[in-house]
Length: 104
Image 1: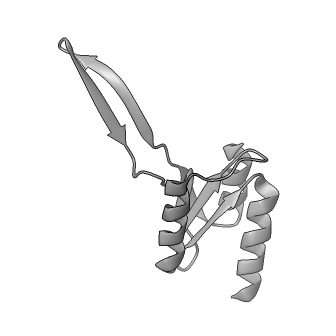
Image 2 (image 1 turned 120 degrees about the vertical axis):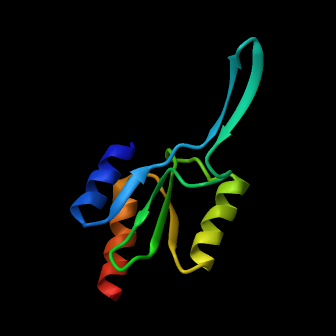
């Protein structure tokens, strides 16, 4: 699901990577620890567009919607001048970026 999107971004000259967020419970020296990683709601794929704009892509299976925290994160990215959106497949990314590249 992520690989075709990341490959397309690479071919377009976009520096992007898979971003993991979440939490795990682990035991260390007999004590349980709850460890959070990443920013709550942060997108699955983040990167830097040519020209320096921040890119955030929330990848969802068909029919799925972003959580409220994911919606807030995308709004924060767009409000700060970055490009954040939801993609269900690579064709969604192609549509958004081709439209953006034509506008430049």
